[in-house]
Image 1 (cartoon, rainbow over the protein chains, first blue to last red):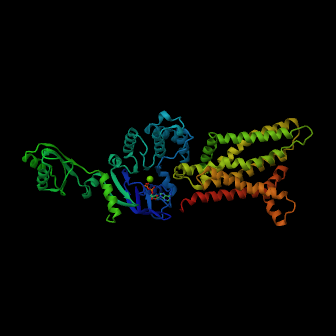
Image 2 (image 1 turned 90 degrees about the horizontal axis):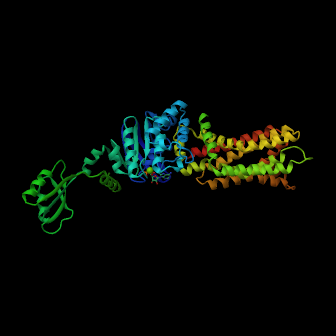
Image 3 (image 1 turned 180 degrees about the vertical axis):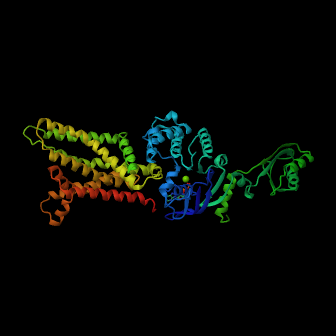
Length: 317
Length: 238
Ligand SMILES: Nc1ncnc2c1ncn2[C@@H]1O[C@H](COP(=O)(O)OP(=O)(O)O)[C@@H](O)[C@H]1O
Ligand SMILES: [Mg+2]
């Protein structure tokens, strides 16, 4: 549905987006993940035909973003970063204006406005002035606008920034619900967001794609290997040595071991392909150390992200 | 074109939310009213010429304020991005903004028709110069709005836009008029000065409909609108 090939954007001296290529299939929810300044907004602005690429290209539903810009824009719904709106207008006036701009006739406009205001929980503020609304409501107005013409593709730039936790939860639920009907590309620098709503993640850093895959794939990839946390009562040094001998254990790190016969917490890094939990538990019990907890902990995308960025900085990615 | 109308309608109605527009309207009516009261005396010719002439002076200062937000505000708040990512073209946006402001300007003129009514009630006005005077004011207003819109297109700052527009309007209108008052002007400069907006405009308020003058205003307006479209497109070259 979205196909990006060698897309590049240079602002003066700044290389903001550096030859990126990716595909988004119909109905997918794809997260575009990266730290501030990674080039997310710039990429989305090129996809929405706001900025032309310096080189490379992209197509949306088979339409070229440069040569068929108007058709592309008519099948896209876009929520720009920071949700710019005409603050002096009332919510229904704004949506009506946007509908007219998209040449929707009166009855379609009325039907779609009712639908999007319902879907984005805007019915209660329909007659309020946008400038008087809270950030959360404005975000919904922006989303309602993006949805108004029932676009095939929705592009959302940091849709939950500046919202409170309840609003974030509601917005994510809405986004997840939209998945089936629309193809969705959303950018974020918050990891739990992609884990919560996206079927696929594209990690971008320094204008380059550093990884892509499902959140699970990324989590299970080598860099992302899980670790096993063990908490028991025993002599720290001996516990460490015993655990290091367990087959499949790649490394042991004591997190807060104190002197003899007090609590030890160890983080074990398994070798690839091993599940070391049962063997570790058996070893500890054999030594007669009371086992308090053993837990497999998946690394968060956050760690991956930091690694990816670090690798990139060292020129290894 | 239909999208230009949609944009023009939004622009026109947004004027009524801004205090600046009401101040401009009040100022316009007060000055016109004062002039009318001063001129509308027994024994004086029944005409609106001074009112029309003063309107142009007033517009040099009012139009920059009316137009400063047209695009500068879109840049400042980022709404330009929402606007341009809807399926609209730069030409439609610029035309829409222009027509919206021109619409507001016409709304500003409507109450002055009261004075025409009073003239008609108490005398026998010559309608020719009144008609051509209004036509001239609308043409001047259109040109000024195109200039104000242009100044608003390349900056995020409404103050910068207003000051720049006032400077241009002053240079095109008041400066040539002032220079024209100087008697010892070389022929070359005399010709330049005669291209001034005010000189061309006074023909209208005298009741002279000159095709050259009409074309002058239409072409100049078109040039500024065209340049504004190019400025909007230029975000693509950066
Ligand atoms: N209009 C612009 N002019 C110049 N540089 C820009 C502009 N917009 C973004 N940049 C630069 O391009 C890079 C990528 O920015 P951006 O796409 O906004 O990143 P993100 O959205 O991931 O935070 C940054 O280094 C930023 O400073
Ligand atoms: Mg951004």
